Length: 468
Image (tube, rainbow, N blue to C red; front, side, top):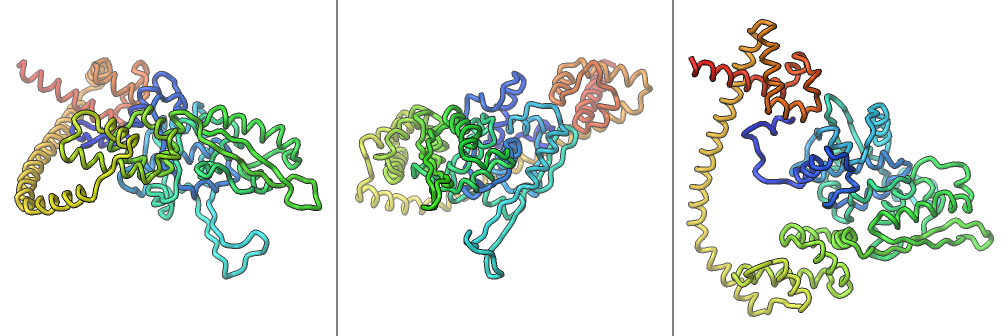
């Protein structure tokens, strides 16, 4: 348990990361992988990161989990620290083989993203641009947690991407073939266009990492790698994919070029993804209006007519009506009606809004004074909460001092009583410890467990004193 999980330190609002943690807790005890989640888990991934090559499937999942955590944090951090079981669940790593997990982490650390303006048909010179950055920095496992960092130049690209696409961890963790996942990554930014550019087969073979020698021969590459990958993408993902091949040279019959033809499936995942291609609109529809899956699907089906501009127009009109108090029931339902009937604000309504905004400005000073009063009250409440936390920490300290001063027999009895209490059972279950085998050393060496043990002992001391 992290320090901010202790009593009295509750976060002021539920964050996307907390929502993912709640879903993890619901599913982890049932042994259900992330790919079977009934709610969407994903983030807006920068198109920049689709160019990663020479990386196997587990390492790609490792990076997905790490970047999801970075993207969901409210503020950028020098280091990220989460429960290891949560991280493994995000990357759909079901094994307990930590040695293998370390190997996967090392592969992710070896991966780099490179940018250059050197043309493919000539050697680089000193005037060319070339940049190479590791995708993953330090990684550490300790006491059931994982800590990692990401190069500071990459963090803004992860947290606030400009050109991006929606990456669903539910879908990306469902792939079982490295080439399937590599192709899926590479083509996602091209889905809105319906096709990719022509790709050299030589380049494509480098996407998933090492391949067998037969992969250099197209008929074997097609039979053993490409066709199975295409089938898996079409089965488990939110897109339908076919491909075309050609020979670049007119003097050779050797196939050396491929391009993919793409379209979104008519599913809820695809509806979310097609809207997420325009990330600002997706966030408005999801966070502000809380559209349902059915409503997202309807928008996806009508994207040829319901363009970004028309959606923005309907959003503006609905906001206007909400501010006028004219939306009585569902803002999401009203927004859908505005889309279907092409409602939009008139110039007279825009002028009226401007006039009303000017009138509201005159009331700002009074509102500022009210806010200052509210802030003062909030500071007082926060101070009281801080006093409560300090008192609880002091109580725990006194309880631990009493426990340490007791003889071995008394300590054993106090420890047994706490372990069998509802609070002790809950804490041991959270820490994945077996109540039947846990020792005094296990408890006192764990900052979280010994904090709650101290609270428990202090409570018994107070009860004894009150009874006397």
